Length: 240
Image 1 (cartoon, rainbow, N blue to C red):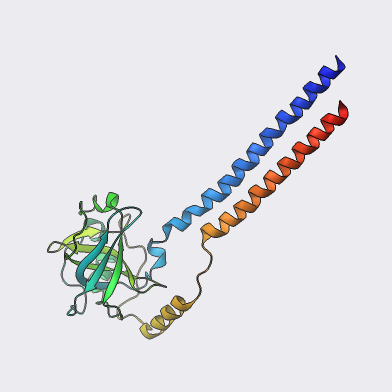
Image 2: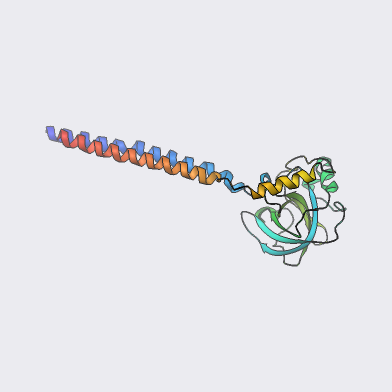
């Protein structure tokens, strides 16, 4: 009879061990997965110089249509107007505080003849006026931002296809930031800063940092669980 009570007590200690270990593992997995979300926003406007809007126009090639963003290569027209021509704007960007900077955006004057253009995925672009992939050879105009560390990338706030059909690229109904007044100051300094940023070594991504921290945490939890289980078995063995 006494032996049976000890066995029940030992089983309870083993059963009770699983609950805190499961809770620790759940917390660890949450810490790994949740902070990784901002790393998915790589091609939001945060990676682009939202102080300066530029107009560009050219011919589409190398279209990659899909999630989380669509991409295409734009070979720039050699003869571009000095600033944004008279083009229709989507409803979301017709307020004066948005339409003014877009219409005043100077033509892109950077060193690249081709730019990698990043646009919203089909689920958004379809709602905003383009329900099909762009085609190689198609002509596109756009106003948007040049990449901060990769100045061969371009993120439009609006682009036009098929003889001036506008396609909004801004979530909500306003620009992500108020651009500087035209003409933009310190363009020479900006080019030097962009070149320096491109040469700088990449920092570890948020995903890598949190993945490493999460791995260490999980290893610690598992080690503690194994230690407690072994100690529980030793205690049960000595009690019997």
